Length: 243
Ligand code: IPE
Ligand code: IPE
Ligand code: MG
Image (cartoon, rainbow, N blue to C red; front, side):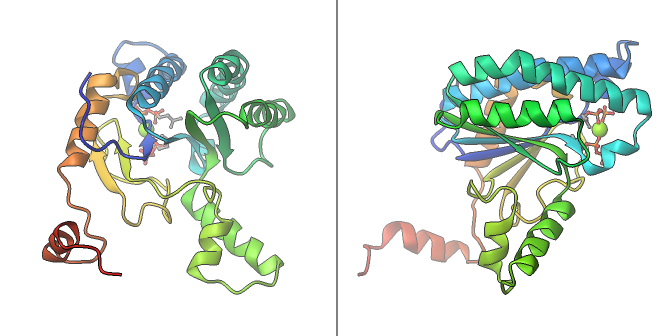
């Protein structure tokens, strides 16, 4: 295992490519999604081992409802099954689970499973795992603005940030998208303002520790300027603190 000098505190992943992984093997797409769950399990462990504090994954987008009914119901069944099977292990491994997204469209069984999973892992602190399910970046901005409006609060950057679905964690440092596409697909639109991006050609079921380390190494080569100049950053690092 490679231990890079800086491990991103918050990694967010668009887990893309399950369908293509299955199609390449002449298997139904849902088999690819099943394999995707295995890949997520491996990734959660790898992140926890490397000292990542927060992992946020995109599991089902607001737009994924537009897929064929058979695939959507396969994904819902898989999600319910994975909840039952994985939560006890995640609980034992110190993972704190959060489900991020619109819950009203979900079945009673799935909604209850989500609530229970959050409840039983709430006191864990080794790794925060946010599962974005029935999530869209636009949905998040709209629900946050609506919340402020309902409370009669002014819309400021700070207030909106505090009303977003990921207000319990800092913004992602590194966003990884597998599957080869180089787009955001309505993932964390607000929170990725200054995230670094890493696009992997691996399909999600193939994403492993080595590829995670490549992404982290790439992150280590970036200069995050946040609007400043390179020399300003250099000065910050070398000059004594002025109080
Ligand atoms: C990502 O894999 C998982 C979900 C969107 C639920 P895809 O199902 O999008 O896989 P590809 O992109 O078609 O290969
Ligand atoms: C993004 O993947 C959503 C998830 C990984 C859950 P999509 O496969 O839905 O994205 P597009 O359609 O290629 O942009
Ligand atoms: Mg896709």
